[in-house]
Length: 261
Image (tube, rainbow, N blue to C red; front, side):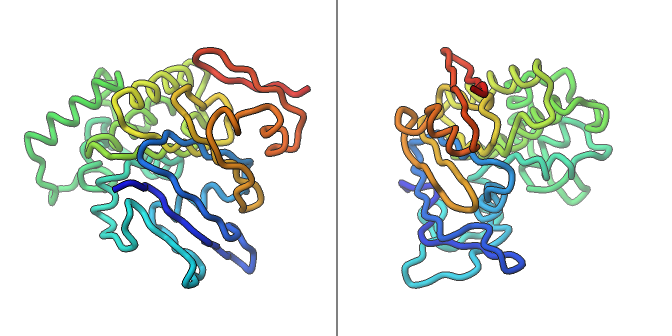
């Protein structure tokens, strides 16, 4: 397999409005990619297309809609190859489920663990491994509603990693996190990338961008307006065009920030 995403001439229409307008996007396995755009630009719809929660509104003989080089997927098999953490998923976990159960549920693509789930020793060991890697082992017996947003996010990332996915897709991962939690998350993303798991980062927060991101795709009004490598795309000029403000991008060896000029 060479490609993670291969979309060509894909549109999504809701209530007679084009949410995604004839997009073409190809992301290879060798790339850590950031997909940026303002709220309402089509990012969430793209995630649902990737998850196969929705499908293109129509396809022509020129259209391509593939993941991992395949047109058709068993959704359960797909979920074992693709780790996904979204804000929507986090809302679903706000009940009396412990951190450890949350991570175990990743093996079953479920919300928590039921009596019908058969848990192997390998599953327990892998869950322990990723919980320790995410540095939340001390919280494993706490239930989700008693944790901070940052702590919950780390358990959901651990849940996404238990199947050793080829790709980890993170949807606005720093949303609702305080500064300390954002820094921890930033370091975690770097550690994940260093271990070889490729990251697809969907966000409108410049501070989410880690140095390992080497490909940028800018969404605006349901269309892709910029797509290319970091040197070409990740500039003050392009960010200003994307967000319709005069912005200055500043980078150091780890973090990015923007200011309005």
